[in-house]
Image (cartoon, rainbow, N blue to C red; front, side, top):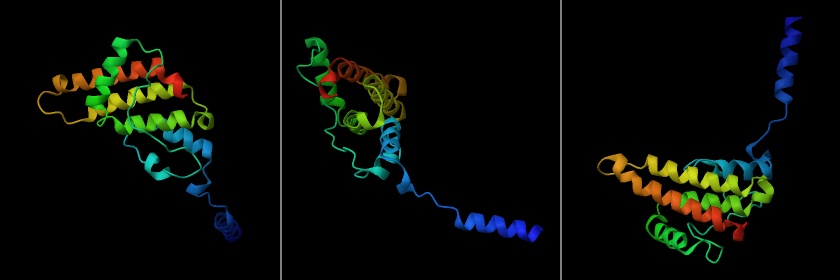
Length: 157
């Protein structure tokens, strides 16, 4: 009897369908990449696959989108100084905007993830000198960019 159970178990395992990484749905990929922390592997792993829109333009601030002039100028200055540093976070944010209909995430969720990723980058950076002093401008830039995107991002949603 034990032999029969063992053979049955082996044959079940042997013929069970294997689910490959390619079997993941387009929606699951869009959700995973949109919500993945910056520096995570999924963006690179899935890049260019599943018929999703992988276009990106790094960090940019939507002009003419109702952002008050002082905030717009502050955001443009923050992007000029910090845009290169935050590029990976901004590229993921662009992905979230371009694929929101597939992922089902709201604009505020995608914007919040941008902010969380930028803050994470600020906190992970090995700053010269005392970290608390050095990361403060980074966190301020993250907040400034996030607020501008919250106000004006609707033009690209």
